[in-house]
Length: 141
Image 1: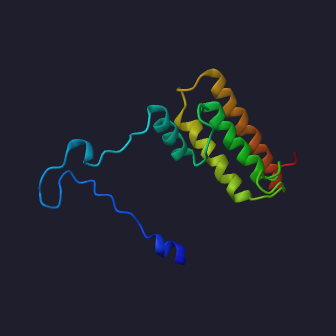
Image 2 (image 1 turned 135 degrees about the horizontal axis):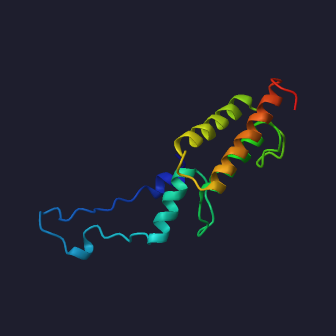
Image 3 (image 1 turned 180 degrees about the vertical axis):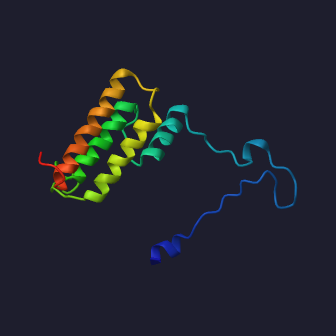
C-alpha cells in the first residue's frame, strides 16, 4: 500500500435503516442509492456475459454472436492476425475448443433458428473445421 493510499484511508457508508441508538432513520437517509436506468442495466447484463465492452446501444444478435466465435477461431488457427498483437498466432487446442462450442450451439439450437441463422452456423462450422483439418495436416486444403 502506498503512503498516499494509507493517508487517504477508506470510507464507510452506513446503509442500515436505523441509527446507533436504535431509532429508525428518516426514509430518504436510509441507504438511498441511485438505481441504474433500464438501458444501463441491460447493457451491463449483456457485457457481463460476453466479457467485452460494446458501445452503448449496440444490440447483440445470434449472427453477430456466431461471427465472434468464427473470428476467434480464425485467429486461433493463425489465419488472421491477433487484433491485440497484430501477429499471426496459432493455438490448435483452443481452436478445437471454439469449434466444439459452435458444434454444441448447433445441437442445442436445432429447430429454433431461422433458415438464415442455421445456414450461417453451418457455413461457419464447415469453414472452421476444414481450416482446422488442413492446419493439423488431417487433409490437404
